[in-house]
Image (cartoon, rainbow, N blue to C red):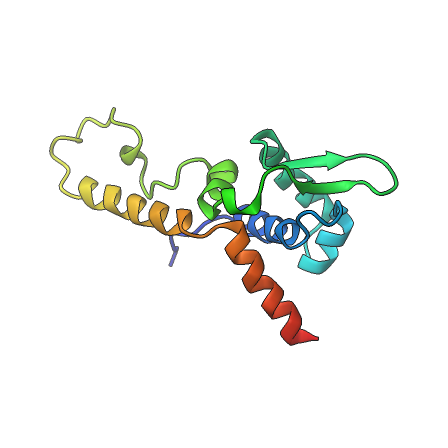
Length: 144
């Protein structure tokens, strides 16, 4: 049985961005550090960070003390921003975004799919990186 789910890339992107948010305004974080902490391949992490960098959410700093850091405040980035950067649309079916379907006027389920998309979007927009970073810090503290 298949399930409607977000990709591994999105889940890893969220985890990496939370790591950067936890260290916001401290120092750049090397991908190796994120990869080790989150059990993600560095190569895969490089691919994941590219669209986030393109959207202006992260910056890189070169040099011996270089690495990645958030380019904007963690309060301004939502989980929806991350999902959209990696996946594009969160529509559960293509016709929600593409009105070229010949059955659009007869389809009684399209309005349900549209509400599903909006509910997901609303929930993902309610979760900022700052909020998630606070929760993450609490888990780090309880593991020590």
